[in-house]
Length: 104
Image 1 (cartoon, helix red, strand yellow):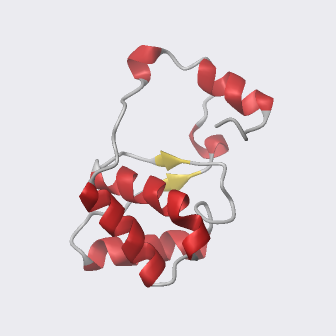
Image 2 (cartoon, helix red, strand yellow; image 1 turned 30 degrees about the vertical axis):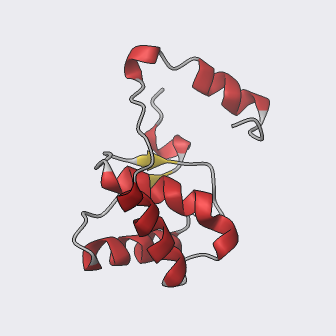
Image 3 (tube, one colour; image 1 turned 180 degrees about the vertical axis):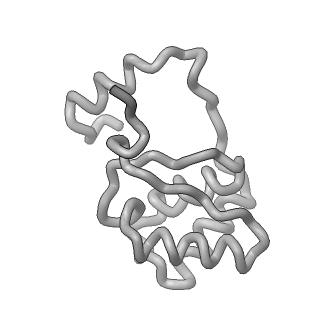
């Protein structure tokens, strides 16, 4: 998060602790992330991005919200992440931009 622009860090800092659920990377999520790479969704340098998607998938998050428009929030990537999820028996993951889930 330290690489994020200041307005994004401020936004995240304003989320009440009671609305945050901390999850931890498991071996199963690591394996799923590696599968995304093996299947060519993204390259090896995007392992952390794959781990975000895999962990959200594994914990059955309602939605993964991301500003990463290169490796995560890109329609062809979303389709490919979900194709692998379905192939391996996981449910599809909703991946959206912050603008799509923010309310006025």
